[in-house]
Length: 618
Image 1: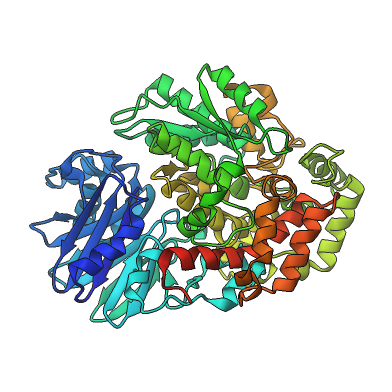
Image 2: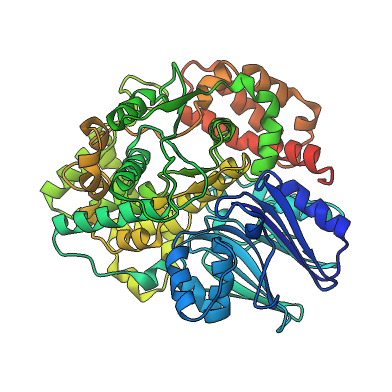
């Protein structure tokens, strides 16, 4: 929901609107500004709750003492509103925005502890002449800031700050280091010099020219007591997950779902259907039966069959979107500009999926992100689980049998190691764990007393969920969806579920030969068995090796022969050229080879995109 901008210090209205303009895709419904000599707020609105003009931002409260510009959703706003009304607060709107203002006025920064949702917002206290900034627990909504000669500025995306710079300079050290693609999101370092990322789970005050940041959320501070028996754990998880979906149905516009056919998105859709049948509650949309499925005919990434199995099971229709890169290759640089970050795969299928939603009038989608990282959905997680199993042969056998049959065994694009080789990999990892485990260094720096309570698998998941994979995924899907004016809500990222996941023992996540076992067992009665206990895992990705050899061969060849490519300082042109040619020419090139080629080439494409769109990059 929405794009926000703010500036403490004098700024003219023309500059304010120039900064807002690059955020219009995030909030195409309306533009709002609040401008004074000392502070200015801007807001691009994606209208989800209280569609009237009363719900517009920037919004004021308490006789205009407080002003807010806000991006996100507070799902428990109805419960909070009831509590605040009991304290004598009076509301003029039906929005969650006004609830945030009232909560801040009543409880101060402690209001964050009461919010269940996703957010990045700024509140100006006119009495104290101070700016309050806050970001949600896991960083689902973005926030950037910069200290400039003109003053202090913040925004939902880096590009909104570009008009305030004389020149936009790439951060060459970060752009050239492909090994950091899954780790820089949890730092304050950005791809553009002079811009900083506001950390997840952090609040800040800006007053008298000084920014003071403080972390307000750490999952390890909130571990819970879980039932001792596995069946009771399953039951409690089911209740939590369905409630997480139920409160995320609160919307004044229709809802949709990005359905892959995998376990996580299928569980989300099934829980939606169950909540709709059993009473979703006040302010919940009854128009939720919109599933969107990206298809890749003729490639190993196509999961349309499983997705159709799921929609047939629920008796709803689905929109199947055939991803044809040739139809949008001329928009790739625009997509990369909107994405504005680096990643290991092209944004094409994701942009097309959420673009199809928007074209059909869907501006809110409930998706299944977060389950893999919190509950153990990747093959490499099992290395840590084997450490927990120790010498217990039964548990070792169970863990090895859990391995995903990721792709057909005869697929040379996605080679799958044999159980024997997998066993060897585990021993090698133990011998050289500091080299093979990307979280080894991070784990040494975690001093929290509850860290020792976690088993090896859960420690591995904690690093994936809080430091590497999941923060990157949350960032990516914010950009993919908001580039099309669509908001993603993620039930698996409800803080109650995340804290529950990290309080569970590893045996509740990997059990009886299945990964994410507690999710499967909790939701199996709502799913087709072939989906609930499916062992193949593909994931939503680009079939990049197929594209490089086929449909996009010409694009890649043109790219590596361009004059600007040969002069690009962000890459090694000769090395990248050789890698791209190897993928195109080698009949045995794998998915991993093509992914590596894209990763090596992407800093050049990023530079082209940011240069052509911003006009200031150098």
